[in-house]
Image (cartoon, rainbow, N blue to C red; front, side, top):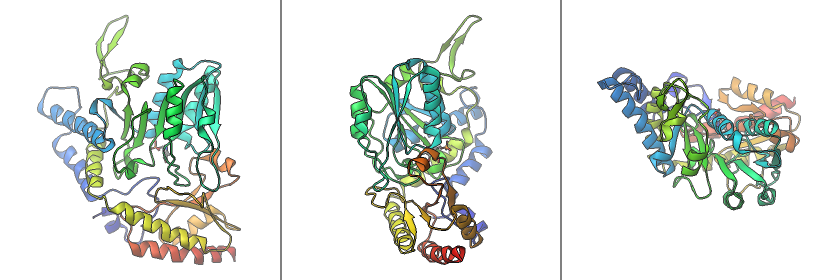
Length: 391
Ligand SMILES: Cc1ncc(COP(=O)(O)O)c(C=O)c1O
């Protein structure tokens, strides 16, 4: 397993994988190979290089479909989870009316909160928030928030703060039965899928390539056939039309009508390589969970520490914590001085911080590049640094 950033920066011990993964060598190589051998505009020309670029783009669509275990015709490639979620909110705006409600959870990342909040404000719909238990990190009685006026449910598959993986099946099933559209923000879960995604009762499932050991600028968006019919393309331009006249246009009938403009083909090359690489690391998830447990135990032993959702059952290999008397930003800064890259702040989840009455926390997210030695070093450094900061 080779990560070039480690060779170039041997003193950095990177624990911010939930924000962005470091890139394996094969992913960087795939992007170089694209630039050197296949760089052109996809879906725009019939010459050899244009065909090569188109193959790279469509190859990525296929690889994403394989990763999620869905059909390729249900996959659209976008630039980020944020962009995909906004595209969904704007494209569905006309389907939501006053008197209806849109349901999210208190654990949403801003990317899966703001687009729906704005939609509700514009349409006069109710913005409903499912509370999240502070001890287990689970959604509290989520099905109670669905009724016959629920137009849409948009929830994350796993929290980017607590790491809790939510049991969404009952909520999504109730929502579908009530006739609501269902959207899952899979940004944090996507790198940890064993057997693809469950598409039953799911209309859209979103993830970002850079959280799956791929590059930035590319994201996967699963759209059910029903959603493809319902969603209005909000970005118009080249590549998404069959015909254009002075009066009107006819969009292409397949999923490419949601992909107007020149696509980020080099990032597609990188994401394909990343998902292929990830598929070869099945046993590594266990190792990451071992790292999480080691860090959990170390933090738990520090007086005045508080791990978010401390009794969570099913989590991603990440955890967040606060330390009495220590500002999270100061802690992250002090750790950085020792070469440990961790994240501090509200993690683009201010509603969750308010819900749990926190001003911020540090998040530690190990990745497949980390060694056991790095984790042990961080576990040891935490108590030392916290003590120093407490004076
Ligand atoms: C749960 C969740 N949703 C959405 C996003 C937004 O992803 P991106 O910044 O790639 O658009 C993130 C990023 O941290 C996330 O953790």
